Amino acid sequence: MKKNNPKTIKAWAMYDWANSVYSLVITSAIFPVFYSEIMTDKAGNSISVLGLKPESAINLSLAISFGIVIFLSPILSSIADTIGNKMKFLKIFCYTGAISCIMLFFFFNENWVILGLFFNISASVGFWGSLVFYNSYLPDIASDENMDKVSAKGFITGYIGSVILLTTCLALIMFLPKMLASNTNEVGKITNLITRVCFLLTGIWWVGFAQITFKTLPSFAIKKKIPNKIVKNSFQELQKVMKQVFAIPNLKIFLGSFFFYSFGMQTIFLMAAVFGEKEIGLPTEKLILTILLIQIEAILGAWIFSKLSNKIGNRNTILVGIFVWIIVCYLGYIIQKQEWLFYTIAALVGLVMGGIQALSRSTYGKLLPKTQDNTIFFSFYDIFEKLALFCGLITFFMFTQFGEGMKQAVLAMGFSFLISFIIMLFLKKKQLISNNEI
Image (tube, rainbow, N blue to C red; front, side, top):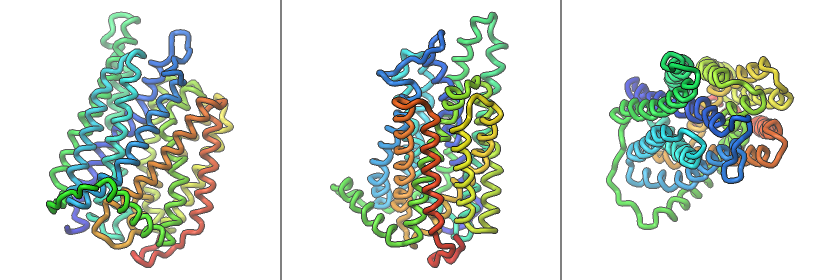
């Protein structure tokens, strides 16, 4: 297909607009805070879930979802490359995630926590599973010299869309209950209902705007039969890809660094709201507003990092971002109950979060060998990212469940960023395959 087509790129970026609301409303802002409130009794004590602390339980549920995606990704990517119809699988995961968000509407008290955690798992599988196929379109629609710009466009579009919905949800939660309630006792019940309506809106937004992407992007269907031993073949194919990837020194170094900064970065972002509630004691409104400001700042961060990469190259720009993350982890470890320091940390996170995500995707695309089977290569990239997330969440789970608190886990994330920084120093600035500065 023709690359750098504005219509195609816009349609591709619209899937970021569609699905980023899940990442913000469900995993980062409203659902974690709602879950934490539901799982706290009137005396302020946490309600255990199958013998686990509630923060450990939600952490473990996300880890389970990443384990599922890690197993499914190579199989489905192999099928997609075999029959050529990666659009079909993008739709399947999209609908799975969106419907799961809608079903979270029925999680209204602690008696339904297992249902809530189940749909939290399936929504996560739908979101992250769809990204395997969504990301694999990037080399198909953008040339090497435009890949950074297009990747950043996707993230910026997603941040804008998610901020719009989160702002709407926040306004509904903050003002509507007081307007509808006839007395103080009804405010809590109406707030609970409005919050669950926000989960409903998230699923509808996701599946609704995704139709723009589905109508425009090609499926690349070539009507081949799926081999009988597709599971075995898919892991054999993944093993071949791994050998190809690790045969390219720059790609091997990049993925090593990528693993360790993904280990820390994504885990911290997923646990940010729970950290603010448990360690700082911030009320719901301040937590959601903080996450909202992180997203708004991330729009600026993605744009700044895209521009900075043109000046100093992808490698040096990512190094700057990793260094900022090291500072974030140190501040997170020493923080006590200072709200101003939590907001400072949030500001730093927002600045580097979007920038590093966008550059990671485009840098990997630049370093890839020339191939038509982009799905399986991006499956390997996504498996690496999910494996890092899985390890990060399990680390967080161990510290929160058996340790003294979440600060120790944040310190562990800091060491992962330090390892990542050192590895990234060995990445060569010039990549001969794409002839672009990395």
